[in-house]
Length: 450
Image 1 (cartoon, helix red, strand yellow):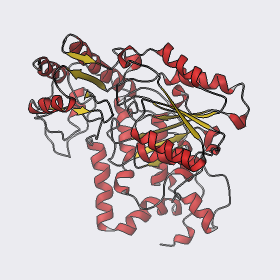
Image 2 (image 1 turned 180 degrees about the horizontal axis):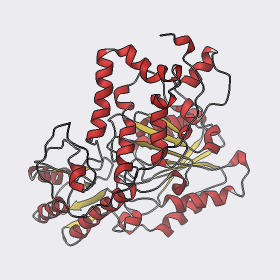
Image 3 (image 1 turned 60 degrees about the horizontal axis):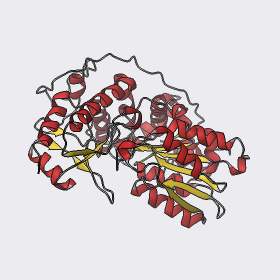
Image 4 (image 1 turned 90 degrees about the vertical axis):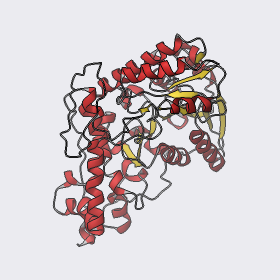
């Protein structure tokens, strides 16, 4: 294995989307064979459910925290686990180095991951960096921003701890200021016009970064990113390039549900974990950067991508690195998981992004409509799919959120609470759930009257 000659230039190419199947809406969950050799079928929602080794005695309404791996992801992980256990160094070389030596660049793992992610995101492979989580992506992004003491970061009161702390670390490092504003007072009454108006009125001449979360895990509100990005684009038309506003998004709780590309959303940077709604390998994520915004971010962790490493070795000519090359953190990771990430993107594309969105919204609307009929329950998530996604937050009179989750657990329902200063109960149905399971949740909550 001659490592001195492994570096070769590669070209990027976009993947093609799979044919999208049509699904019936109603499908009961039946006992299934958990044999890994079973045929992978995507014809019905029952077929999709069979790809997961979930406990059939439980109703899983909290996979938004940490997802189960479907069959193709488990198989991809298993392939690399076996390879590393048998021949650790050789398996690494076969996946990273040998494809370049043998002219089989399509088999090179860094390229496989980037192309599958780009196919899903509707972008170019070189725009996607790979991380271990949403939190890592946010930290890389916000710490790496080229800010000064004259710059302002505009964010909201609705964002997660990971965003708030990453922004604080960035401001401390660069001397920038942070201003937090509320985009709505009552989540269930939020509307597009008000959110967009508040954003526009709060952007000042010093604002360089607008940092938001697509779907708020505190309330379930889904921000109208496209309309917000249009406000920012409009303001940027009157600014020079040195004073441009950059739109940064924590997108994890819309990612894997909403049928949208990066162009549809209109942001400049987008971070998300792929081990939640994407059902990807645990401990994986992505950080996307629009090409004309790459210059705004410096890497904070040395990349082990072959191009920057080759430049350091002197075996590759100096050139401007892509976002993928410079911002994917180096070091030795759990590669059996990271290299299986493409299987999750392909899994979603085989099902169809539009079908996943329709199914998830259908189940969430069914749940919210049922809860709305119960006068001892207060729903905090907007009813409309225009301003909500897969997270549904509510309170039950006479119970704390933790007490509600415990009662649901006693009934075989796995729920969660929102980890914020003001906490709510969360039920988050996804494509592995059924209408019957949603109705069971509603009936269980109906009995919880103080």
